[in-house]
Amino acid sequence: MGFSAKQLHALRRNLDHRFVRSRTVNGRELSYIEGWFAIAQANRVFGFDAWSRETLDSRCVLARENRGSFLAVYTAKVRITVKAEDAIIIREGHGSGEGHGNTAGEAHDTALKAAETDATKRALATFGRPFGLELYRKDKMQPSPAVSLQPTLPDGQPGPRSRLHPDDTTPIPRPSHYYGRRHESANKAFFPKKEVAVETFARPAAPSLVPASCKEVIPHRIDKSRLVIAEPKRLRDKAHLKFVASQPCLVCGRTPSDPHHLRFAQPRALGLKVSDEFTVPLCRGHHRQLHQAGNEQAYWEQQKISALKTARDLWEKTHPRSPLVDPEMAESELAVEQNRSTKEVANPASSQNEPNS
Image (cartoon, rainbow, N blue to C red; front, side, top):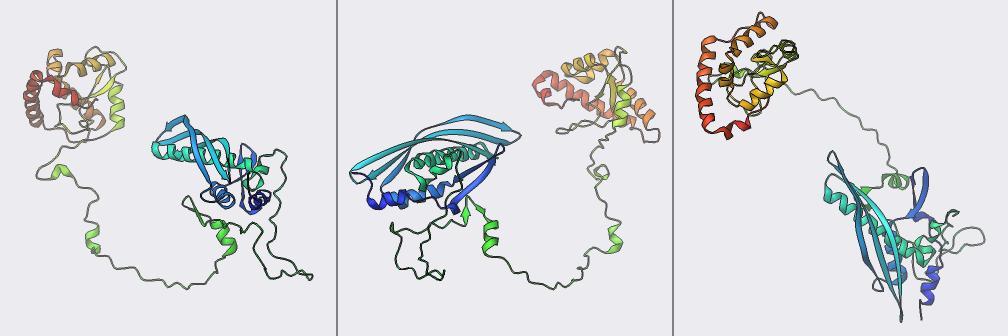
């Protein structure tokens, strides 16, 4: 024994064209039914407790990440088991799915569910036309329209409905929400919004809480160098750095050079270099050698070069009207840096966190 007469009649019915969707892939238009509709058809034809789905195999065939966007592709094998009176009918299907997401978990979850849904639809399609079997034909025609459930009178007017369909079913309505997206195009077709002319009144702007005399006094940015506990200014000038790079190396006189920032000229800051006014030209070899030395002040004393004086002279050439650094302040900073560098010689691991020039 197999399916009942009612189930066989339902399996011979054509697919309702209202539930057929289409999309364009690589220039080809593909027709398909959605996963929720295939499961609803199986519940209607076989019964809610008379069939089951089992995922036999699923594997990830592609996983890729590009600038925070994740891509995953899965393949799955699904088995459909149907209890038809004393018989058990088993059908299997393969499918693939692709998922995109901002996280790896979201992309893999979407791809796995899409692969299982695709395999389920292909396994159910083996039961006949109600599950979209005709859609897999290469020379398929348009799906036949649904059979009217109401009788027609001789004058063409639909008559009263006397009884249900022979298989005791009615068309399944499509849900208004699917995977969290609203189908506004379908809603607008059946429920058009009436345009109501709304007269708007211009409201006067609220008065400003800040007096007009104070708006020009309030600065856009705070100059922290003028505070009681002042912070040093860290000037940035690309033109000056380009000028310093055009000068010969202070050690060997070769060109081109790199603009090296004197790290002992200003107090340290997290991730910030000293001001561009404290830069000297160094070739690539001596620039690398200076960073490997660790104690910059001892390096310049060994080379017998006054790096701060050279930096001031170069800054005066590109900024003749800018105020120069106070020599006494620079000497005091050198003394502080000398004490700090003496401690770094004893503990060289602490100098590895310095920002590169």
